[in-house]
Image 1: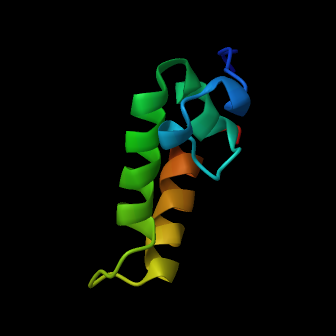
Image 2 (image 1 turned 180 degrees about the vertical axis):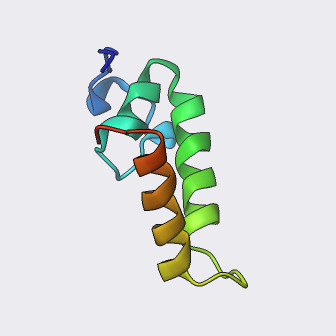
Length: 72
């Protein structure tokens, strides 16, 4: 698994901070605007209203991660 440095939340512009400390989000902290956009996209895809239930969306994510042999 690759190591990507991150930036401490305190050093990120407040408008770009996100309330998620998962590594998959935090690796974008080097470009905090991208981190905020990624987080907002995640929320839209996984949490907002959709014809596909949240349970099914989570199951799809688990299957895709498994197929891709994700370590996280």
